[in-house]
Amino acid sequence: MIDQIKYTYRAYRFRYKIDPDEINYLRANLKKGDVAVDIGAHKGGYLYWMRKGVGKEGKVFAFEPQKKLFDYLQSIARQENVVIEHMGVSSEEGEATFFTPKTKKGDSPGARIGRLAGDGQYDETKIRVTTLDKYFLEREICPTLIKIDVEGHEGQVLRGGTRLLKTCRPRIVMECENRHLKEGSVFDVFNILLESGYQGFFFQDKKLRPLNEFKAETHQKSGEGRFWEAPGYINNFIFENHQ
Image 1 (tube, rainbow, N blue to C red):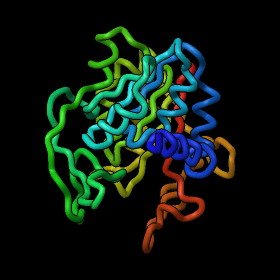
Image 2: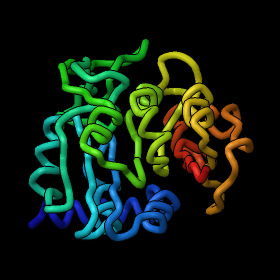
Image 3: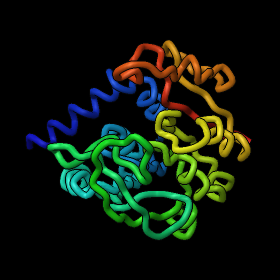
Image 4: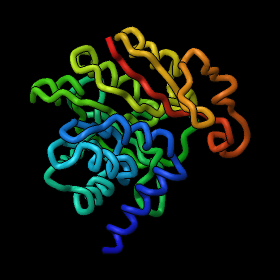
């Protein structure tokens, strides 16, 4: 009962405080019977609203590589219209090395596939990974909306879904930051979608702005401390393909 209350409370914090624009976008663009995908589900802040959006007629597929969080989601969020997978999503099917920052809780929102120079203490594990094309197209499932939060692995996720992106043209809600990328920049990630016929946007001052107005040196300016929490810092992006 307490876990259920915490799960619901977290979901409402995402809607009204953490990512209000993105959650409202998700709610406005999911309808009963749709298929939503949550890559990097963590503790279900987005999953909660996806499930409500697609209704009993739809389906949500959530991917979470962290065993502790997968078990938590299985106990708190699994329903007939929710499938929770203990695996990651990448550019190739198989196995990957997963790094989780050492914490007292044993889980972290900063866990990811691959490690960056200068990282602190991590627990290293092997995880199963699949691709968007492999998992969904072979099952003849066409997602309506995909949320991606994978701490710098966005490019690999998208490269593993090139056929799906062109066939299904799902809406994409994606976190992407230069500070998480091992090489290249956020624009290299954006180009994967742009070259597939997508248009990009971001929220600023409650309004959806075109991607060509995004300036990394301004909107993702690095600095001292937790600079990514500074007002005006942009790390979530929307992509749509209406061709």
